[in-house]
Length: 109
Length: 112
Picture 1 (tube, each protein chain N blue to C red):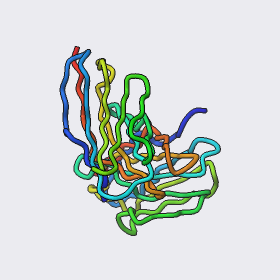
Picture 2: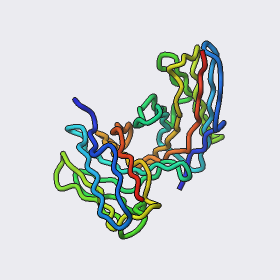
Picture 3: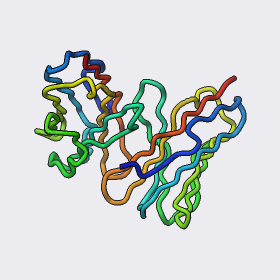
Picture 4: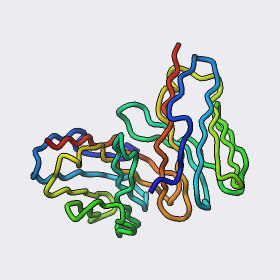
């Protein structure tokens, strides 16, 4: 069953712009994670935010979590062509992760 | 560490044949997960193991699918008999906990 739902499904921006992706989920969680998948490759873990955290940074990535709204956002600042990929949120609640269907980001130079 | 290793990377087979996918997790990781990814259904968890023991196999689509983990460094996912609707990319992932997962490169399966 799908827990996380990413929005938008697809996003096209120019290099240097910021990209924001959103994730909504339905049930209580212990943590929420974001993964990146380049075309034809496996998923790569980007960042994990726990349910008692509201914001987390890692390099050009900023993740927020609002447990009252059951939503999270991933912001990629100063995007590069190499950021072109699909981005998935995954929710953890003490069992296995449940992944959303992803946002496909295209960054053109 | 080499990361999670999957083989084969690509598999083309005919309907009715047996397919075996293999995975070597990262050493020291106690959890191993098998996923299937398709355009229509996204990334689906099929089964996961903790310390070689299957914990949740509720995602295994039907009896044609089976998975084993005979030791901490090897797991197989078998489909017998295979059907065209099994065509997908199959990922193996491992984790030291149930949190961050490390994915292999995937096996692209095409059943004709």
